[in-house]
Length: 130
Image (cartoon, rainbow, N blue to C red; front, side, top):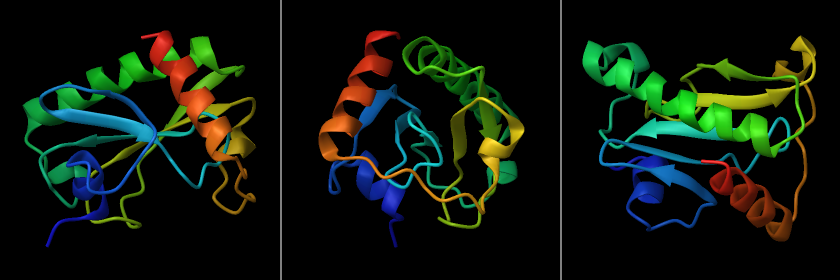
């Protein structure tokens, strides 16, 4: 059965897309830890990130790096943190989270509430920095 991320990639579920190529897809997290929180996923549906073959994992990190650099240039932050949890959706993914301090990546923090207009604006700003 297709994961929610596969449905997003296929356009069955709308998203705030940042970028895609033939192997990877990046979009804003709709329950963000901070403004600009982005998910990077392989188009290949694989549950656990470390089950990806080495070449795919390496290419995914390089793809995520381009997105992270765009986030840094579009969203005020000191850094873009990278987090891999892998329990929430059974589809390998990387969280790219704009941060000011380490505590910004604490999963217990309340999530940021944004309007669809704010999501669209953030996505456009990140895309424009690619």
